[in-house]
Image 1: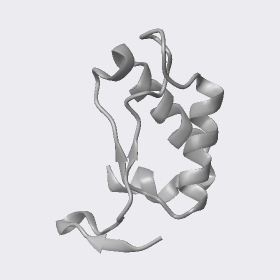
Image 2: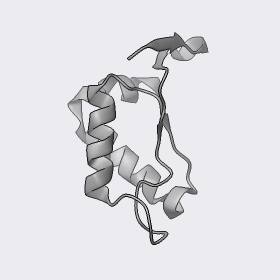
Image 3: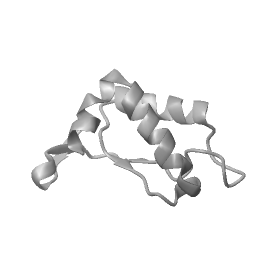
Image 4: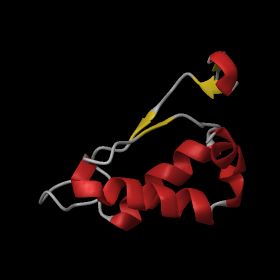
Length: 82
């Protein structure tokens, strides 16, 4: 994974994990188990830049992302970014 300096945030991965389809509240998208697999693969590859919004899958995406970050010890660098 390559990184870029993003202001005072520090180094962020050049690749961003888009999470608009984390959760299947809209009748399509990735269920929680699949979202976990995607997230774990991204973090294992060194990713630390995640796109999310409170409107993605009616808020389920943010809930899933928050739970994944909180439960994954490898993602400590994600929690530190704020």
